[in-house]
Structure formats: C-alpha cells, structure tokens
Length: 239
Image (cartoon, rainbow, N blue to C red):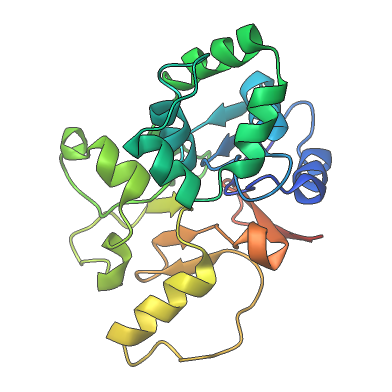
C-alpha cells in the first residue's frame, strides 16, 4: 500500500485518468485541490475525486471560488464572487453544472463546503508531511494558519529558507503556484535560482528540500506528477 499526493488537475481528463491507473485499490492519496476550471472535464473529475474513498480531497482556491459563487444555487446570479471565478477560467465548469441535475449539483456543493483545508501525514519512516493547496511556512502554532493562508497564499515561498530550528523531518507539500511561475518569482529574489533555465518535469523541492511544489501547471504544460509520500518517488505524466 502506498500513500500519494497530486494536485491541480484543472479538468485535464487524460492526465487524471493516467493518475488513476497508477493509484491502486489498496493505495491512498491526498489531492491538493483545483480539480475544476480551465480544462473541459473539471466538474466530472471533481465529482469522481469526491466519491473516491481512497482520496482525501483538500480544497483548492478554485473550489473555494466555486463554493462562494454558487451559494444561491440552483439560482445562478451575478456577484463579485461569480465575477472573480469567471476571471479564473470557470466557463467549462459552470457549463457542466448548468447541464447537470440540480439536485446532484446541490449535494456536491454542500459536501464541498466541508472539504479539508489542511492534512498531516506521518510516514512509516517518521517523516511528517503538511499538505494544503497553497502551502505555508513552518509554524509552531498550526491554529494560526487561516483558510486564506492555506488556500490562497502565493508568497510564503519567496523566502526560500528552512531555518535551523525548523524540524528536519517535516516536509510541506503544496500546489496552487505552477512550478514555472514559482521559479520565475523565486529568480527575482534569489541569485542562485537560474533565470529562464530549463525546468525538469516533476515535483520541485526548495527551502533546503523541505517544501515541495507538485503543481506542474497541467492546464498549460499537459504535465502532472504523482508523489509517493513514503518513498519520495515520483511518476510524471504527460498528455
């Protein structure tokens, strides 16, 4: 039995199906959010992940926007939340929702409101993994981490540091910021990050190897990664 993490599928059916073929019936996985939007099959993939007992679904910012924008469902009305969601590629998801059974949609939206925003996993080797959509900095006070921090924060990675008194067996795994964009922003602040360098497909380790970004930008790279949390082995999928 293996324990995996993957993230940010964004409606890419070929990549999602390839991932599901790799996750065995006795395996478990953490999905770090953003099943929906941009790609054509997000709503269907969202429902499949929600219904898969092997997978712990951690809320992404796109699910968060959907929940906020559709609070009046089955009435779909304009709001600032709907406007924000629209700006972030919601068209294929919203179209699929309009075509679905309203009672089915409502049941999934209600369940989505209870999605986790943070999970901790301790591997057989004694490594601790903090899993959330956006990631975070290490803190001794987990209760201080807010929904905004764990779903939306796109700045914690800029320090690119793991301080000497931080736990050596702790790894923070996240998605949200596609690796090419993360590297572009890091390069603006750190001379040791190559600018316009070639990016190897797969997870990106930074902060002295203690933070791991697994968002490969599936919606524009057609690439994703499945990270084994017990062994740190990776499997890269390309559509």
